[in-house]
Length: 261
Image (cartoon, rainbow, N blue to C red):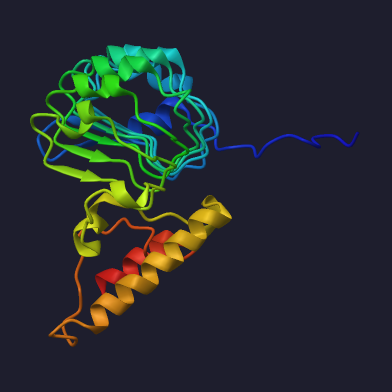
């Protein structure tokens, strides 16, 4: 066997110095550790020395696993893991009692590997489970009484538990593009309103099915724009992060282009 054959891609090594230089002050004065889009394939152990951060962004990498040591980040209020290759989450996520935002959209999570301990996140306001491989939603998520926004789009759901649909503070639930029976289709969400729940990813990070879905949504959006009363008015999406747009290989180039439009 040739040397290195069969091994996965070698990701970027994150040192403690790199991690410290990636800490920013968030809009509310907290500490945000931003390691998104770094080509990381394994959870960097060095960041366990930076557990006093309030926000942790590991999105748009190639992570397959989050270790149980995530429980050391007890101050975390905001955790973004979207657009990785996660197939499960550790039970230790349930110990992050200060968490109010959890984004695990666009991964490979199945219902079986979704930890029941998620129902312990009593302060959670926003939970995004979209673009995964979920065929059902645990009724125990009905324990998240503070939840205001829930993303379930692009999964394999045929129903949503009443305990979840009747959450007392739930204001927005996006369950589009799931195989619900015709008689039980979930409430339609306007495509313009749905955009804020979706994310910009490169085509290479999506499976063929997701690429087909994204192209279909892009076509629908273009048709919607053509029928607007003011077609000359360009739609503006601040902080746009949506797979409804075909991502350019160089995302920084894409952002610079948008800034000059």
